[in-house]
Amino acid sequence: MNPPGRHSAPSLRDELIIGFDRALRTLSGTAVSSRPYPGTGRRDPVLDPAERRHAAGLMRVNHTGEVCAQALYQAQSLTARDAATRERLARAAREEEDHLAWTQQRLSELDDRPSLANPLWYAGSFAIGLVAGIGGDRTNLGFVVETERQVEEHLTGHMDRLPANDTKSRAIVAEMRDDEARHGAMAQDAGAGELPLPVRLLMRAAARVMTATAYRL
Image 1: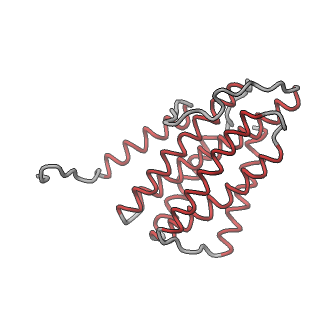
Image 2: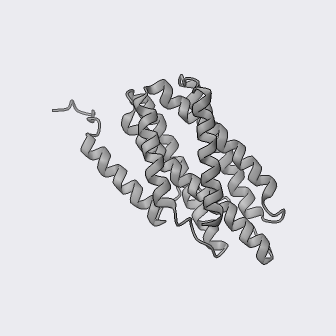
Image 3: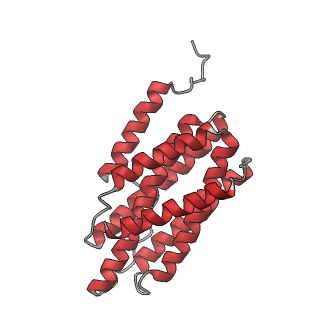
């Protein structure tokens, strides 16, 4: 029996149920943001058909990236050894769910849809997250640092590529980029280890495949 005021850690069964629920929300498009939508109060830009398709393609890539982030953080939390590491990963995942909801809303505003390949990307990212976590907490946190570093670079590139007058998409991407930088700094401060160069290069290659696929499919 737990002492008064103390709560036992979730069992593996509970963690799996929570993970299954998160996967359903992620893939069904029912994620809910806990923070205000960055596009609120901004006038919908006038975009020609080509600009709208391009903006939607970039936001679809960002949405797929957030689908991958949910899978990665869920798997990494399951395999983390230290309770403080699990809490850091869970907190970052909750903020990433805001990104998921924001990009989903922006896609709807652009009259477009998420990537059809998201279930495959979710499954693959979950498997990668398990491998990262099995390597130990330093490796787990190092994977967060490198992932967020690459995502931050990717979002900076999107700021250059989005239509100049698409202030709604730009506001979302800017807010996401700030969060990603903070998540990476959190993992670094918590004792992240440096990933080997071949692993970092492999992550970049996988990201290029994902972005090229999600932009069109």
